[in-house]
Length: 473
Image (cartoon, rainbow, N blue to C red; front, side):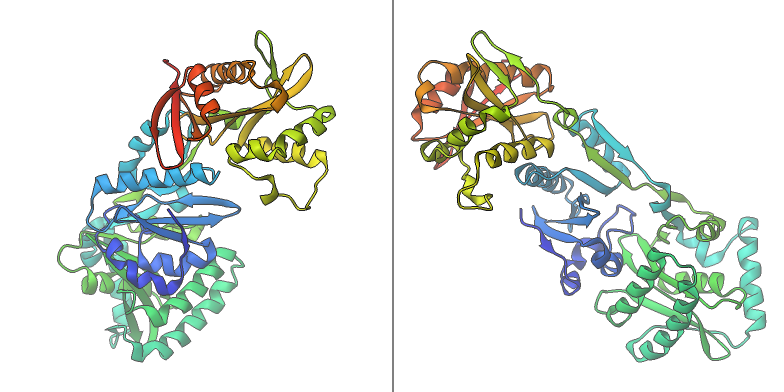
């Protein structure tokens, strides 16, 4: 899977994914993506016929649930597995965001109990019945009806018009006035939202959206824009002049009456971003539901390991490599014959052509600190003779194992012994369920060692033989 930076000009090509999405979450829409993708540094990929979105925010990546243009739930699951594999291969922490409630259980079941789940109130969307906005029926909407009636009484010449590109200059002038008042709030998100509004206005028709303006005394007093996703109208922009009594409820009703066509059952008016005034206003319209948007951070048991373990075997000690052994470790790390089969060339990360011995030790310590791998020195009679590593940790309690031994200590069964006891540690202390390994096909010694350590062959490709061992084996 390859993630590509989402450019605004890419969005029209993605409309087919949004039009049939039934998550009832506004994030999965062209308008929201256009307005917020720059702020969130959104990336995307298309896998298994599904759109995968990923935000980069404060140094982390957050993946959305994949959405299929055809509503193929099985394809969406396969695409979610691609996300998992991508994160594992690239040492990325697996986070999901804006997950719909109906997908939550399967993710928790897949990743076990060590999952942090949040459902933050200020990001939940407000979902309403379309008919309620079209009619404002009964006593529960008497307040809205009264405001609309006052607006119509005070502005008998009011008019509602569909937005067209010919009205762009006039609407921009109206929005500048609104923006000045909104900027007074001094809130970064409010400012970012207004930038998005200005940017999206010329693109409304291209994005399959539509807009409406409300006039009073010939002037624009309210503007709204949105799009339809399956059975839901998402209202992404809704602005009205201060001091024009009833402009907001009048605009909301007229917009619904015009654009909630056959098949549109719900109106989504997005979240309140934690704004107290906005929350009060949205609640007064009596939402049918606050749409859950779950965030999941998938934890691995390895993530909680703060110190290197010390594992004692009949002949060996597996432990953190000591500073005093930096020279021996550098010799191990720079051995070109070993590196040919190790699958890693230290030169790719080195900042100097000939780094000192401590650089190699600091490099593996950094990998442990970042929870990319668990590297342990293999000690025999207080001498560093090799290294055994658990790495490539996955999100379903799996990891990969590897080992390398200095030339003068090979052929004595040290590698096998180290593998067996690190795997035992992984199964018992790190709660791993599966440990994997691979070796180049020409590396027959490693293949023999892996089998001798109890690992079973499980496949091959052009370059490698693959092996595995489970906690039950």
